Amino acid sequence: MRPSLLVILLLTLLFTPVGVRFQSDGRSDSYPAQEIEEPMNLERVYGKNLAYEIVSVVSYSGYRNYVQEFTENGSRWVLDALTALEGANMEARNYLLNKMSELSDGRMETEVVGNHHNVIGKIPGYLPGNNPAIVIAGHYDSFYTSMGANEGASGIAVLLELMEPLSSYEWPLDIYFVALNARYAQWGPFGSDEVARYFFNEEIEVLALYSVEALLVENPYAPSDERVFMVYLDMGQSNYHMSQYWADLGKVMSKNYGNNWIKPEPSYNLSVYGSPWYDHNYFFNRGFMNIIVPFESGYSYDDAYKTNDDTWVNPNYRYPLGAEITRAIGASIAYTMFREYGVPTHHESFIEIYYGGEEIYYIPITTPTNINVTSRWFGGTTSFTLLDPSDNVIAFQDYDHPSAWEFTDVFSEPVIQKGIYTLVIDSTGITNIGYELHYSYDSDIDGNDVLDSEEYWLDTALFHQDSDNDSISDADEIILGTDVNSVDSDSDTMPDSYEIKQGFDPRDPADGTADADGDSLSNAEEYYLGLNPWRSDSDFDKLPDDWEIEYGLDPLVMNADQDPDNDGKTNLDEFLDGTDPLFAEVETIEVPWFVLPFVAIVSLIVVVSWVMNRESGIME
Image (cartoon, rainbow, N blue to C red):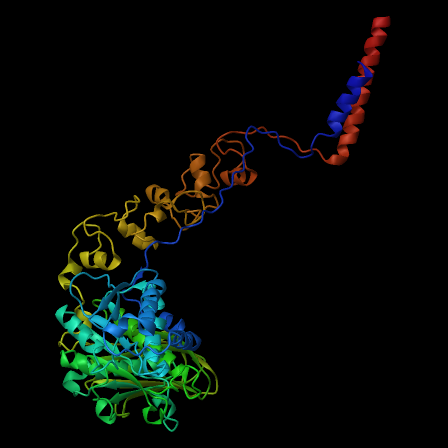
């Protein structure tokens, strides 16, 4: 043998990779998680209280900036309808129309109504039929030469600040944003009468109408919870639902979600309430009674009202007051719209009360009902007190022990009087206490003597009808936005009922091709195979679903310890090693690195000896 061959053999032995298993198939595939597309449809509101979500995006600075921005259009005073077609009034109107489109992401339907060019925007509700609507109104013109920052723009800023958050969801009922014009035109007002006539002629039923007036001056001597008013027309207990309830609800929202600055104020306590200049009067004249007038508590101290000092930089203006009214109105809308058929109004809260402290909740009652309170608490002793609208104690429970694991039925108190009830929770021990609190009650916000839990803004027979036999009632299909005549509304091969159960959107076909668990199997494939679309290992056997399917194993059977190719390696070993569980690999012996030189030397000696013996034999 030539020396060159010996060198090649030696080098081959020395540089063979250590520990490599020679096998037929060394695949180790990985499947990166796919990005799930955002659903195309907005969340439909039903049975979910979004008051906090709406309140949390309303800011003092945002509200103030809208007042500033809007008044930069200049004095928006008009003499008559003709002069509204030019100048600052026209620019303000165009600004509003652009903002309605921009802030609603194009969802808002807009219309200019009446000879004096009132602007109406509507976020359409998803329920079919003629249902009641909620209206927020303010006027966008200003007094002669005035910038109208407080008397005008403060109300418009409420509309603008609520447009974006309210447009981020689909609500069951229509929400109208109304900017009235020509309040101070010659022989006016005109806009409020034109819009009231429009609503009347269109037969729009108004569930609640917020006619926003000046907001930014407070009574410096008023208590902290009376900084701004929700003015209502007092029509007694029998008609409590028509106006007072909505003012009380604003108070409740201000306490439960805001700063507790709002006072419900009966109209007879406000001398200017009946003035013909105020827009709400024209709605009253057209038969709309469910009107609430947010109004500043410091009207008698407002020396800039309808003057040239009514500018956004006026040092006497308190913009947090406007933001508080905005939050209360937005929260009231969300609280009203989360109504659910068959379920009483309910509230849940997770709170911590420092020792010796208390937490207060306001509860608006519109009909005879029971106020049910349950809770569990951690850390010490506590008491619960329920007061009626006259602040009389009607229920009290004192506990000398914690109730950490099981809920305690604190009380179920029957109540008859309509108004705001107060629930007070006290930490009576020497430690901080954490609570999980639930309370519920029935309501009748339209005063028709039918509990809200027993009716909806739909024919209740639809809740017991299922046209496509997919286990989802026709009413629920309408609420969800799915097709009452199709088991697969978005045609993504996954039934609506399955998508709802799995948390997918039955209106969005994109989630059929999406991959929720990132295992390279689409959601639709997981449905077809009976797998869990949210787990890459449906049977918890440590073998990914896609790997089991690739090799013909059953991803719904725990087969990690099986050895179908009888090579002494379990399926789990094969997965971890990246080998084929259905092909028996040849076992190889791993040689430690320090043995290789000796093997090479011995091999060389053997080869050299063989060569020398062979040459010696030839010579002989």
